[in-house]
Amino acid sequence: MSRATILLMLPALLVLTLFGVVLASFASVSLMVLDPGSAVFHGPPTLANYTRLLGSEGAWRAVLTTLRLSAEITVLCVLFGYPLARVLARSHSRSLRRVILFCLVATFLSGGVTRAYAWLIILGNQGLINQGLRAVGLPRAALINNEFAVVVSVLNFVLPFFVLTLFGALRTIPEQLEHAARNLGASRLRSFVSVTLPLSLPGLAAATSLCFALSLGAFLFPQMLGGGRVHVLATAIYDRIQASYDIPSAAALAVLFFLLVLLMLAVVGGLRRLVAVRFAGEAA
Amino acid sequence: MTRRAIDHTRPVSAVVTVWGLATLVFVLLPLPFIVLYALSRNNYALFSAQGFTLQWFQRFFENDRFMAALQNSLAISAITTVVALAIAAPTAIVAVRHRFPGRDLMMALISAPLLVPGVISGTAALSFVAQTRIGPGFWPITVAMICFTLPLVLRPLVANLSGLDPDLEKAARNLGASPFAAFWRVTMPQLAPGLVAGGTFAFVEAMDNFSIAVFLTNISTTTLPVEAYSYIRDIDDPTVAAMATLLILLSIGVVLAIEWLLGLDRFLDMS
Image (cartoon, rainbow over all chains, first blue to last red; front, side, top):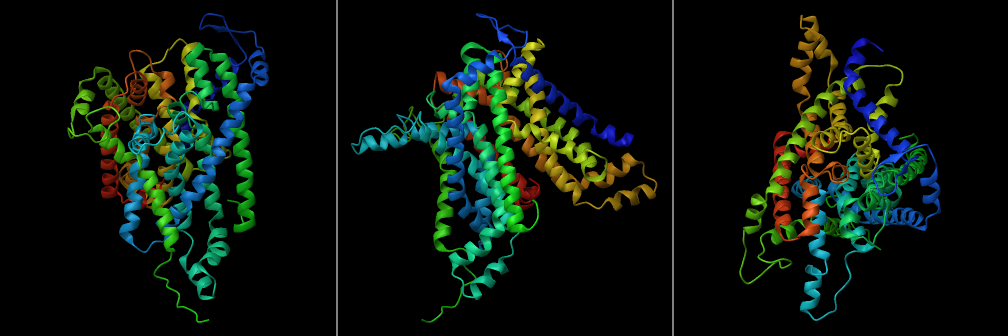
């Protein structure tokens, strides 16, 4: 490594080191215990936080809820996002493509709090949908403070990321391949299933894993639209800090969450490699 | 059975087009409602007989806590953008033009903060500032944002730089320019698209971040998303909708600026 390389890398290395130190010290805090009735924690190292967590039903339920919601959101994302990415990549109308692109980038830049609040207005007990129901004499629907609200709002947040990522992959597939399949007598569906879909699998895998990772880490939406009734890992960690300022126990939960994310990344990465080998003949 | 001619001018079937556009409507759905709500007279009423009002915008600008939070958020985002770009630019040069063992691993590690859920980074940062007695506040938030946005900024710069011809810089060197002058006058101007794209990501992310910032704010220093969250929890009137409307207008302005400066296609190529 030349001196120039080291000098150029130095700022980024400092940032990286800081990040590593912060995470490592956090992991070590998970081995400490909180002094009862204070915000001070101390050693000696003990696994007490972990044994308590692994024995608690709430923590396991949060793990399962996090995984289940992320899986639901990811499936819905593929179902709703793929057609939009396809229209964006294939439509011959330049103005339609520009409008879609404009809308996606603008929503994606408009921020999380904005959209979380909008869903509160739409789905809330006094919200738009319930006002409409009341106006026509129907009973109130429970659309908020439940998993439904969390899935809808996170899906809404993640879709632009998913569609833009998949779009990047879809537009590199030559349209002539689909024409050829159609000319040889394949139906639209057949040409999609046997030509376009396999070719788009590596891109689809990338977009899907992004969507899954974003759903796993979602915090603002479960916090605002779950109303304290949807317990995912992110909100469970926040609660520990808010309720009792118990940093060591939050740290232990965060370490478990981190391990879960790493495990999921490894699983998803393995699947992607499999897909890439099977359909593109090379590792992506 | 007669075979119909295949219409290649319609590459996507009507069903897929309608389904796709329905998804787009769902994506856009929150935005018009929040704008209407910001203009409404009462809590939880979009339309009323009394018509529209701008009072919530006025409330937003008269609220000292919101104004302080807005100032903090703008300052944090501006500093984050400049510093993240300044750190990412030399890193991108190494990533594209230097070769050494462990380079790929190092680049992967720099992207790590993106993979860690915000709540984990946030609690970890809180634990760190508590232990070191630095305490939460403006600078801890800013440093956390720099760390978090660095990979977002690095990606477009690397993409941009890989597309450039290194011989141009060599030619400048042969003509007698110093290494710095050659970089600054030849390569730097060509990096403009990457800097615009990366800078946009950094600014928007730092402005919008909630999951890390919420752990690092305190009584005297909050950011706009955190202040909006506590306002919704405690008061909940359309003032937050007015704030959100302003953010939507800002993001539309940003997209128009990107389209004008770079074109959205090129912007996406680099993200």
